[in-house]
Image (cartoon, rainbow, N blue to C red; front, side, top):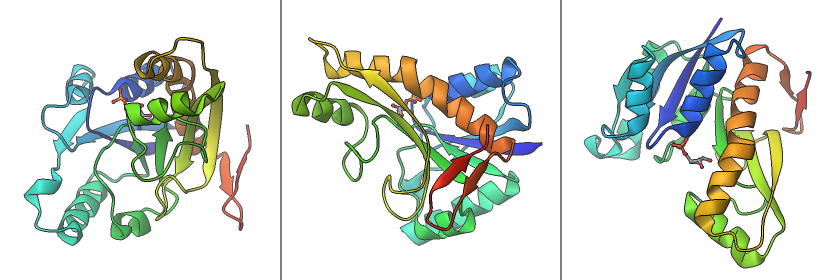
Length: 209
Ligand code: GRF
């Protein structure tokens, strides 16, 4: 059974999708053992507590520099025996030390079809604003491993979502969450826990469903 640690900063609807999947028996070989937030006020913490999941808070501003913060976060993750770390709307940048300490064990959900609308500055509503500005007819979400390049790690799962006439960034964000994020994140977690995701030498994943 793998220990899943979920890192959050906000509302936690993706965390909720993971909790629901777990409660429905859809994550057979893993258990959400802890939710760590960068923000003590995050509603995601409430969702964790409501489900009897251990919580912790670690704030970047409580550390002098990135190095000190990274050290503290790695220590915390090790204390929690994290086998899989899920970034579910986590808004603090992870330094190299964290990424190296948990190589191919950190996954992230991004609200576009990578490599479109990703990289530095593409977060939250901005992603959907840019998609609408470009006039794409299809967008979606991506679950990927986290490496040193922002949104550049190996892709695990993607799901496309249609853009409709008259969409606002808020409407599109909601549709992407409902039709893609809340589906592919629990599925990717389940596949990881079942050891069905293989990363080949070209940093490409092969999924053995
Ligand atoms: C989601 O859109 C996710 O793709 C992005 O941050 C948002 C988090 O939302 N990385 P929530 O806190 O899970 O509701």
